[in-house]
Length: 345
Image (cartoon, rainbow, N blue to C red; front, side, top):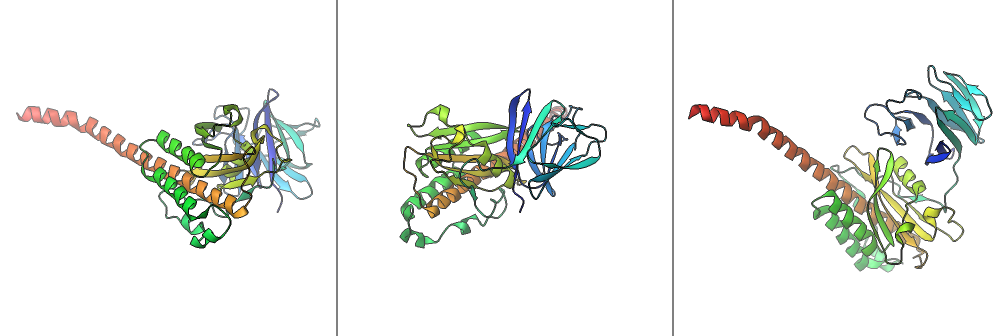
């Protein structure tokens, strides 16, 4: 399989997007119903990266199709009818033409400069749970992923600790009355029950990352809690839970400085779209657990918490919709009932 591509976008010499995609990616302007820049979403057969807003006519709706090829090559197709693509070597890719280019390649779209290269891991190898979580409201086989009670004889947290984690996840499913409360309960469980040093709920807002809730251990400084965009982009693109166990030589980015273990699970809406992630990490000041099964179990428990958040948000959305419908009903009919009652008296 051809490896993923890393895409970096610069505007006025400032990095505005850094993410990885697997397979072909279409680059273009926002369409009706899509999130704005720099949203990445999966469509039939390829990814779509939004780099301009709906009203920016200097970028076509479907401007560029980038297809990875073997041997460090890529096919660049200008799908625009009228707008050219300018490459860094001074050449121009006219509308409705394609060219095979070597990676890395740099090209301009309107005021944006895009650099595409073969992706290199930000840190140690990313690992993922095989199956994506189930959207809220659909039947789930998630519990079948957990090992049997025989795990108490294996290295790891043991049955008592696992049951405490599951109890914490259940509280997220059952007891929250608002989205803020869901988020706070989830990050509290990440730190207090799963035992990570930071827990965060991150949502995508018009393509940007927004931390909605954060909890950390006392030895973690707030300025050191920036989540890894590389891990979060993988979660968003592939809709799966990812984790990394990091070595001393793996910390090449500020977001992973001092981190020994990182994990992130997707938060889905009812349509199965990734709207956010539950994110956690363990710091190097505290010895990592080291057991593969244990870290995998932590990833599964974090995914369970994220599914609790997703289910709670879906329930609140349904309750709000029902309340809104009731208010509209009353606003429409109450004056008519009063008028009819007044005439009848």
